[in-house]
Length: 298
Image (cartoon, rainbow, N blue to C red):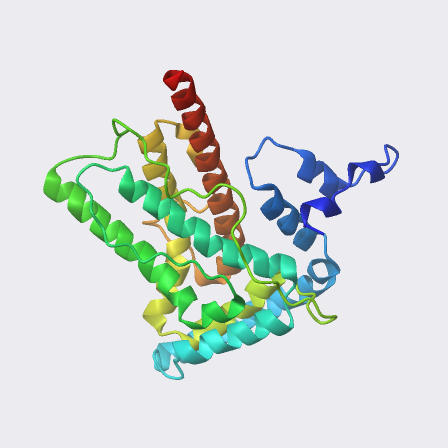
């Protein structure tokens, strides 16, 4: 059964309407049906209701203590290899299929959004490093760390090319949507044992202190500050397409005034939602572009 099939309109009771079904049925926010269903299944889960209220304060207290330790020993105990192995072990053994689905999707849609910006901007030629894991084991290759490096390197090299060419981001003569995937990404089956119950938000809160411990101080702060580049990336896409509404779901804003790392877990959820919405908007723009091209060819 797909995630979307678990939201059955036949079960709707007008005297006791399901708020999660209402959110799933609502199409005011563009989002892939399977991704929306997976997210809502996480949000309504027992794990989020009962485990998250305990996990979040414990995680944040741990982060405060680790920050004190990192002040004295900023780069001790660091190992990206250990971090990614622990993440993989946790995702495989404890995290729900819905959450794992959203995590792997995030790397795919992030890579496609950057590819769309690069391929539709004049005088920009960047060697991209797309991350497209198909299995949880693929994450072992420093994928989480590389995701943040890719984003900052992209912004730096993208703007270097723009400055050298003396041009700005603007709609191209012909839009290129080749990098935007239609339909679902292909993933291997996710573990679904009795212990795979932790939702995505609780998992993120639990993993954030682990990030802080096993990454260097620079890597951790860069990862946290990268969340506020949501606005930057959305602005690039909006200028290419000429549609300011592409900024509608961006809540991680003002990258030059970064927030503290204590809110990184919740902001990562907003980051995932913004990326999903932006990618869905690009897919819809691709469909409309194809329709116009088909009409013109008749």
